[in-house]
Each structure stands twice: as structure tokens, then as C-alpha cells.
Length: 201
Ligand code: URA
Image 1 (cartoon, protein in one colour):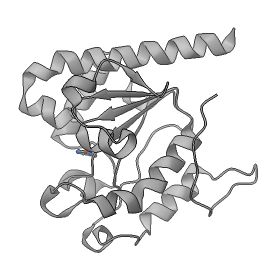
Image 2 (image 1 turned 180 degrees about the vertical axis):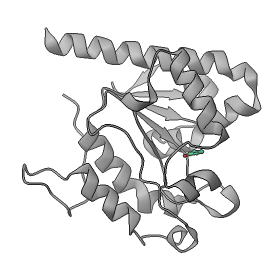
Image 3 (image 1 turned 90 degrees about the vertical axis):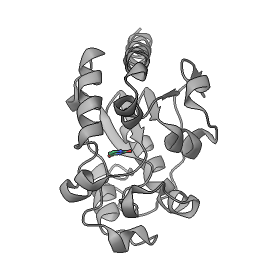
Image 4 (image 1 turned 60 degrees about the horizontal axis):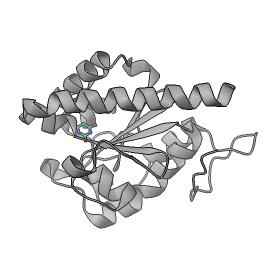
């Protein structure tokens, strides 16, 4: 059984757990860091309440800030296509970001912004209870595992839960990463399937 640490106290549902909906309502009205002032829409993330695979990107970009949804721009198209190649439907996975509001001019999220947003990501992991979490790019890998260097970190599982791979924007910039990205997505899917089979035994 995977244990996640919850640090958010509000919005508990009747079964004692916090519902994803109420968590996302909190995120939409969040003002825990200065990014809130510049956002059009907060982007909590999307996907089924329970998903076997949870993907984590860096931060919403312009398209995501306007739509209030993750990965809907060019990087999102790459992600969608690569998921499909790996035999994964976007509708079956949960997709979110390290920070839920767009940083100005798409700059990297600052450490304090990541820290302010961290409890939301932790709560999402606890509620969605994925069998596999795919950390896409250095921002997600740093925020969750406190490690850097996607190229050398990919291809292994960390803490029995986390896979590291490229960010879709990196795949967009450098087509050479695409094959490895799809391989990583496929490996994550296989791992989730194996875990499910073991659970049902
Ligand atoms: N890049 C990200 O890291 N996240 C998005 O949602 C879109 C682009």
C-alpha cells in the first residue's frame, strides 16, 4: 500500500477523506503565493478521481492559464500523441503540475512558489492513489524527489512509485527525446498493470 502525506486540512468528505472537487475549489481560489495575482485561471489538473497513472508537469503556460486545464497547448498535443503511442488514453490518467498558476512569461517557478503549492500536489496523490507517478522534466523531479538530471534518472522507479522522464516541451524542442519519452510512458503503464494484477491476486 502506498502512503501519501496529507498536509491540507480543509474540505474533508463524509468518508473522512478530502474530495478532489473540494481540493480543486481551494486551488481555484488560492492566494498562497504571488502567482495568484497574475493568473487568469488556476489550473488544478484533471482526470478521474482514481487513476492508475498520475503525470506531473511544471506549471501552466499561456494556453493552460486561459483554459484552466493542464497541457492543452503545443506541449499538450505532444503529450497526447505520445500517450496514445504508449497505448494510454488521456482520459484515463490524471494530469497536473507542480505549481497550479502560470508564472509570468513562463519563467521557472520559484522555490517558494513550489513550496506554497506542494500540499496541493501531495493531496492530489493521496486522493487519486495512483500506482505510478510520472515526473515529467526537472521541475517535477526536483520538487518531488529532490533530484535533477532527467537523462540520467529516467528508466528506473523511485520509492516504488515514481518514474522520471522528459517534459513534453523538451520533446517538442528535441525530437530525439520522443522515442525515449514514449518508452518511459509505456514502462509506466506496464508497471501500473503489473501492480493491478498483483493486487487482484
Ligand atoms: N507545461 C507544463 O509544465 N504544464 C502544462 O500544463 C503545460 C505546459
